Image 1 (cartoon, rainbow, N blue to C red):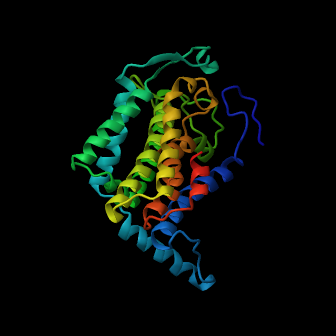
Image 2 (tube, rainbow, N blue to C red):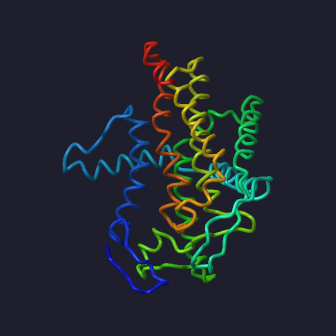
Image 3 (spheres, rainbow, N blue to C red):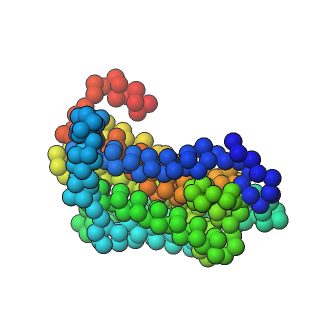
Length: 309
């Protein structure tokens, strides 16, 4: 692990330094696309080239699938960014507990204050989503139907936000603990606590966007299965309950997050931005998406009870 002596520099190169960062960035994009193609076009199975001569055609075929079935439209971006903005406004302005973070060495020991209102925002969001779904204004299964395009929109948005925050840190003089390697610094981040007015971007992305998006994706799978087959399977209900409980726990325990390592030490770089906005929700939901795409089936009663227990 490479070391530097400058107190304003990154003291350790994690994840294999710049080469490791490049590999992780590349494979993270590839993973999302591969899992989507495997689910949508290969019944969830592993797929690969038929041989070395098939490498070129293999990538061409899969690129064609992405272009044909996952290219986001302006309305897709509007839907995704509408969700991001709505969550940002609620995070900034809904009432909530005021929690102090740990003293920040680079700010002379200053403690930032975080407004913890995720639980209120969570239930308000669920109420609005239910109203839109049952009124027919925005059926929840629309998210399932637009999954590929929404995933690409999230990927593009995450990269754009990571770049904007990185450049913004340099312009405003908020970059700290930099290694001097452009790729590695972009991956790890430059800005520790980027804020837009009352909105702490890192807290917003980690608590609101990632887990709420995951639950909404899973819930859209439930809505799709019911609309397509007239019933919802036990396994599908299990995934919805599991993701609901996890998201609910994250929202309830938001006041514990300001003192965690992610908030106190990790800068808001590509790694956190991409995986909060795109990686976590769109990777963790593929088991639910697979179940939603198939006719309802049931396990025997004992394993079903065991799973829910």
